[in-house]
Image (tube, rainbow, N blue to C red; front, side, top):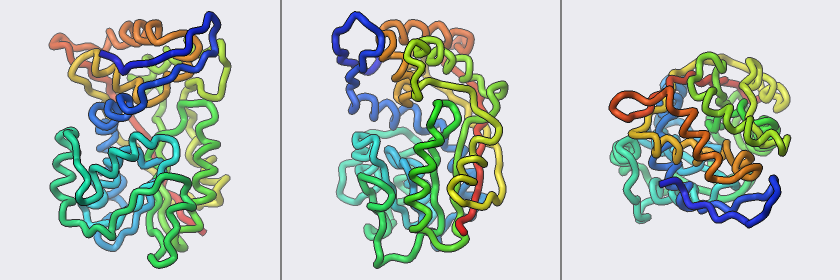
Length: 300
């Protein structure tokens, strides 16, 4: 079943649906978040994240990337202002004494490796990056913004604002990692995401999907006053047990919210299922190869 949506009844497009945010957060944590594990691993390996690293995770969501950094010995602070339900799941994963919940194999394995992390090496903060400031601690050596940009019109604007608050908390020359979708022709999910564009078009809003552009990450870094210092591409296939899981996982990203507001949940579910059909395997699983980009930049 797809996440429950309680909609305001209206006969015209543009009505904002009220989403069961807890169900959506669970779908993100249990289905979708693990799709980006290869991205997290590639970045941490390249930057040699370990015991001397102090990580500030922007838009940390339910905390899998932070958990993986903590399992390597890093001190981690996660901050998020948009998804308090995801943040609650992050606390369960990261903070001692908080019920962990079920989670996926990825999260359970990382949790097992991170169990020895000291409580004072983990913080989860609801709010803006400035709320993560702690004068009693050394400056952050790594700032991550792993939520991929480049597929929602205007999403880079929000990231630039986060960076403006976060970079003063980092030391001089600290690494700042930005992530984005790869070229549309190398992302099988592009054909599915076009459903969001088609259905949301009546709104013509900043929340509608658009193809990723080659210099999205570099433009954000330049506006934030950061110095590019390398980049890479990582294969992050989206694999699901069945079509229902695929729909739930994709909806949990929020990329289809404008489409739901412009039409309704039933219409979005129907068109998503149709778009996923070419990616279904004979055993019922869904498989979509994708490539994501990351940019490493440095603070002044």
